[in-house]
Every structure is written in structure tokens, then in C-alpha cells.
Length: 420
Ligand SMILES: Cc1ncc(COP(=O)(O)O)c(C=O)c1O
Picture (tube, rainbow, N blue to C red):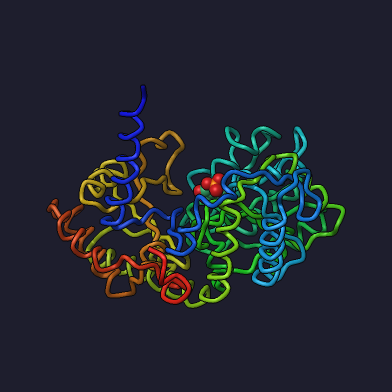
């Protein structure tokens, strides 16, 4: 009865694959898996359950995933130089919820990055954190909007007495001041956590910052933005065993039951790629973001944070108000097969949410497809022709992108060469 619809859905899946292979994807929260890791989707693990920890499962039939999960945890401990890893959250939001559920009590004050300054919805009153407390206060910022004002923050910490401080954000150009705030937090028994969802791959590649060494008690993250995938969440920490036991409970049974074993197995593969190629990749990502920002700036586009060198991460923030705002610009780029998202900028009031001034650009995915500085110059030129000159660049985008189809920083040329 539904055979026709079934076929149509298959066609939509195929169309997505075909279309996105022609686009320049600049969404800062996305990435692609290597051909080899991607080919492992849909293994038998996609059908299975394994609650609990390796060796202590509630279900039988888990010996292979036990081995994979144990290896993954051991590798993450090496990669991030930490004692504890929680790999069961199936997304970054899930990882945050596991932590918030154990560290935040009703009426506790929590200090976060505001939404316009880049705070994620899971740190918001309407999101995961809001389930546990509504008492959220924002970090005071310096005038440029991209840095936390440390002196004002210290003053606010002393007067508002937060129980938890959440650093890290979604619009994330420069490192957050973990080190600068950690002593004050330790003295006042405040837990300082770092949401590294966006920058996990840069941290793995020894770029950006090293939150655990700088004084964060834990890192939560997504595994698929600058990290190589698959789409999951993580918690990493060096904290004492009693507190870590709470996090363990927060992850299971707190915020998940089964933990999606097929993507877990893929994450184990992607983590090896990060261990081998992560530093070279992270260096290239940061260099590419800076190059793209500089090129857009030369074209007269208002790239944010110019006085600080535009960016130290995978992201570039652009004020496109003079071209009609983020919604209009992101739509006209999409018509030309350049994909990115509109974004609020730090100077904007919350009411601008649906029609913000900005767009956010991420270069990590195109870097993974082997693009370097010359290609960033080309992308800037295509964007300028579309947004500033109102030209159609779709055909040129498709032609250009055809040359970048293989996922680099991977074992695809060796281990994966026989996979189709
Ligand atoms: C800072 C931050 N934290 C958490 C998340 C949530 O991650 P996920 O989409 O994996 O739930 C995001 C997603 O964009 C994010 O930017």
C-alpha cells in the first residue's frame, strides 16, 4: 500500500547524496566521515542493544561491541590525556544533560554564554539546562562581543555565587578564559565545565585550547563538528571518582538507555583517524578559516572580530545586514549551492533571533575534502559574486566542487581502497 511512498523516500535519500556532493558546505556544526567509516553504517550493530558498560552489560550478544567500546575509551583517554571518558551519550545535548542532571539543582545559579554571544540552546532556559534551573546569568562580554570580560565576570561570580559555570559555545571564534577563571572557581567550590561540541577536533589536534589542563573539570562535546564523526556525544574528565560516578549515572540511565552501537563503532574508526591525522587537519582548518575571513574582508564584506585577526577556530562570523540580513543571504547562497546558516551576532537583541544580522561559516568540512588556502580564496570569490554582485554562481560552484570528492585525513586510500 505504501510501496510508492517508500520508493519516493529512497529517491529523496539519493537526491540528498547527489545534491550535497555538488555543494560547498560551510555549516560550522557539520562534517563528513571518511568513505571507510561511512561504509560501516548499517552493520549488524544498528539492530542491537548494550546497556551498561563493556563486560557488565544487561544484554547478551555484546562481546564485539564490548571490545570496540573499550578500545574507543582507551584511545580517547590517550588523545585527550584524561582519566575518564563517557561515550554513551548519543549527542552533545545528551552529554550536557547527563552533566546538568547531576550538577544542577533547582534554583542553583548557573553562568553561561548568552544566545547572541554564541551560547547553545542546551545552555538556555528553554533547553536542557532550563529543566534543572531557570536561574541563568550571562557572562559579561568585552565591547567586541567575542570575549568574556574577565574582571566583570570575577565580580559577578563573587556576588551571584553560581554553582556551575559553562564555558564553550556555538559561535566560537576565540578560546574561552578557562585558566583565568579556574582558580576563583576552585576557591569557591564552583564547577567549571567546558562545552567543546564545536572545537573537539581542534582540541584533539592540539589547537585552540586545552580545557582540562587549563582547569575545566570536564569537557562535554559532539563528535561530528570539527571531530571526524559519527554523530554522537562525549564527556571527558580527570575528576575524582565520586563525582565521575555521578556523571556515569547521568549518562545511563539518566539521559539514555541504548546507545546506538552502529554509530559507536563508526566513532571508534573516526577516532583512529583523528589520532593519526588530527594535528595536520586542525592546523589546516584554522589556517583556512583565517584565509577565508581575510579574503571576504578584502571584498568589503563585514567580517566580525577584525581587530583580533577574525578567528582562531574553524568559524568565521560575518555581518551581512547591508546585504539584507542572514536569512536573505543564506537563502541566496543556498540557491547557488553554497550552504551555511544565518546566525545572531553578539551585538543583537534576542528578538532578532529569526532575522539575524549574521551568517556563520565553518571551513572544517571543505578542509576535510582537501581544500587549502587557494580554495578558500575561490570560495570567498564565489560568495562575493553571489552576495555582493548578485550573480548566479551555481554552475561554477558545482564545477569547482567536482574536484573535491575524496575525504582526506583518512585511511581511505589504503584500508578503504577496495570499498565502493
Ligand atoms: C556548544 C554546543 N553544545 C552542544 C551542542 C549540541 O550538540 P548535538 O547537536 O550533538 O546535540 C551544540 C550543537 O550545535 C553546540 O554548538
